[in-house]
Image (cartoon, rainbow, N blue to C red):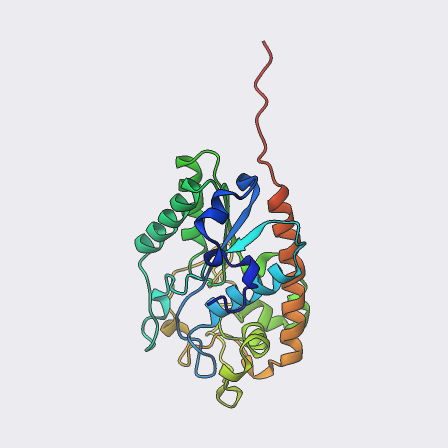
Length: 271
């Protein structure tokens, strides 16, 4: 049941009496890995984002200081993936459903006494939803700290392994994701079916972009025939091993800081 997660760090393996007796629950770090079941081109399985979330987290928890209490919830495999729904196999939740699932999970943890929840997301189509959920939960439960984090945004040097074009446009099923899957689930990667496809170029003087400061709305079939946005043909297991090592080092630092984190407080004016 635990998959990539170390058994001792897998929340569902605890009993209710374990949780009731747990000391200092306000500083125990609970992590919800969140992915998606969506197309990733002809060479990668639908499970890529969920596998990356759980795989990176599992290796991180194995490397984390055993003195830091941190536990993984079961991966949330489904996400908001409607940008890919023209490709068979994609399963998508609505934004409202995903918000409600996160809210209900957080409320259950809060009732049990936990106060630190990390939303470790690996799907690029839903960070905004998790940020909304985090803000709303903190507004409702003032002492609940929710961290809506993207798996690729911890300190890392992954970009140094990629070409300039891949860093800019390789946003789905490209070199980085494929290399990491060659490390995590190599038997599920079909490199003989990998295709290179970048989106059509915008006018050279355009201020707009697919992602970035001035994005426009798109769905995948607008910009890719294969479902790939990038170049997976150059992916390698060695590159995947470097990526995983780098991401894990970054996540160990982040979870360590979250365990010790206390929110800043405004000092009331003296009278």
